[in-house]
Image 1 (tube, rainbow, N blue to C red):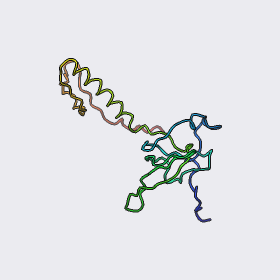
Image 2: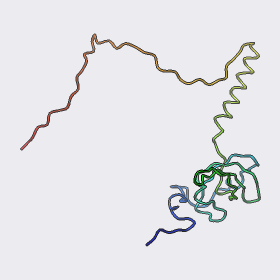
Image 3: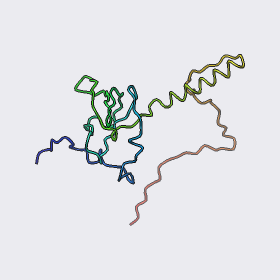
Image 4: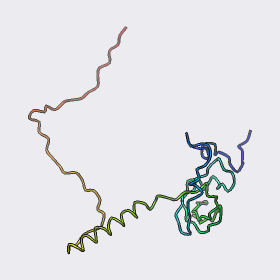
Length: 160
């Protein structure tokens, strides 16, 4: 038999609901507000077939460009052969969630603002840059009460 060529081919695990996450969708899914410009993650939910994204967009992150009553329009980058094309797709709210990709950045901005205000009140200058962690400091290992051990393979013994 030849390979199936259907629209949802190869999505048995992709669109399956997680363990202990099956059943009726929570009301909070429908009460979330999406605004134009929000960054969202696309994740197809197998319990709802209406407005489901194609499997190629599953797990992708995009930006909202249109908001309707039950769906959002999302601009997603898709790789087609050698090019990356911005695709505009319409996805229902069940298959979309707010992305947490900027959460660390926004938290850092708030922390830096607090540090700047405290430094300004104390008439000090402060650096808000992030610096990479340097290499660990070197040290000398003493062999005074610490004899070096030689490690070798255990000889094979044939038991008859």
